[in-house]
Image (cartoon, rainbow, N blue to C red):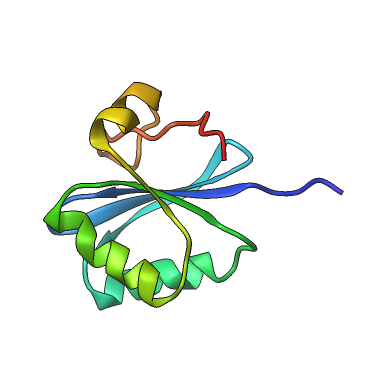
Length: 108
């Protein structure tokens, strides 16, 4: 039986976050959430549907702290990347209409 590797790449900005869901390296969904409890609860609903989701987002200072606190509160493991490291390891994947990038080759 093949194991599915599900990655949630989250691009955090001041008012919203773009979420890209990839399964075994293939994008299966993307959407935007507000950076508040309403948006984070929508994300949580998707995370709960997956066994051992891998969550990756870039440390964006004050913007990513709310997401980090929410994930910590729900005891969800995540990788918060340094922006320079993320840029070095990334290859272009378009999230919705944004020009944000997440890597398809994260070794996790």
